[in-house]
Length: 119
Figure 1: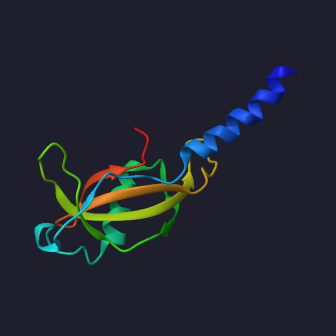
Figure 2 (figure 1 turned 30 degrees about the vertical axis):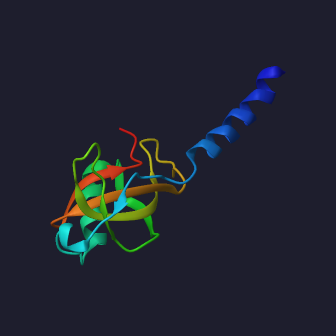
Figure 3 (figure 1 turned 90 degrees about the vertical axis):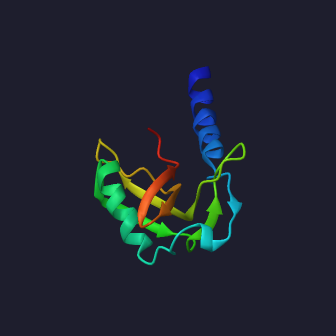
C-alpha cells in the first residue's frame, strides 16, 4: 500500500526537477561569436540525426533566436551562438518522451556544445 502512494509522488517530483533548462552563459559581443548562424535550425537538426535514436520522429519547438554568448569559465572564453529549443522524439522503445528543453552552442555553423541531452 505504501509503495502505491510513494510512486506517484516520485514521478511528480521528477517532473518538477526536470524544469526549464539553465545554461550558464554571459551575453557577448556578436563580433566575438563568429558569423550569426543563418541556418541554425538545419545545423541543429543535422547534428540531432547522429545524437537521437529516431531523429526523424523529432518534433522541435524553437523557443528563441540564437543569442551571442560566452560560456567560458574560470577566466577562459568560449564564444558562440546559443539556441534554446524543445524536442519531443521517440526513444528506443518507440514511445515519445514528451517535450524536453535543450540548447546548443553554434559557432562557424557547427554545434560545439549541447545541453539537456543525457549521455
